[in-house]
Amino acid sequence: MEFHKILVPVGGTAVDEDALDLALALARKNKAKVLVIYVVEVGRGLPLDVSLGGEMKKGNEVLNKAENLAAEADYEVEVELLQSRDAGPAIVDEAVEREMDLIVMGIPYKRRFGEFDLGRVVPYVLKNAPCRVMVLREPGGV
Image 1 (cartoon, rainbow, N blue to C red):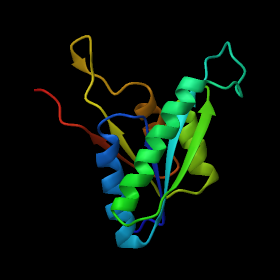
Image 2: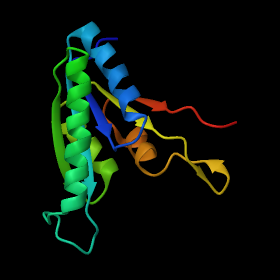
Image 3: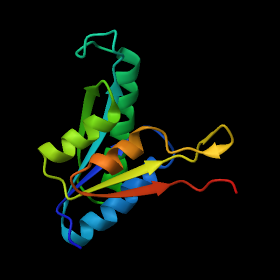
Image 4: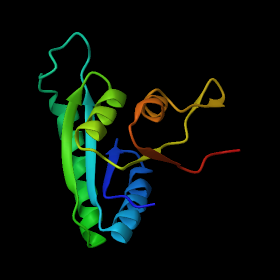
């Protein structure tokens, strides 16, 4: 499989670094472009273009960390901070708009009601993405 454009959504979790490492390894093999995005979710009661200072700051910090990790791996990545009502559709829209070949998503091991839970973003992306999707789950308890 060849990948020329790889999208890596990050959220500020510990597994982001692993997802980026995987994406960079695949990118290096194919000389692919890597786009790292952070989506700030804006509540429905607010205008979509509202400035959410704390969330914007966190997003920029997460993206700066991703850029630094890529630089340490001697690979250049593009980063983008997005605002959207929901992260899932924003990720899929970005993949469609930029004609991505692969989405690499890292997800933390979360439990809800005692059971492992994928949350709402990963199932949306898996169902609607126009390209291949790799989901990297952090190690979790058995």
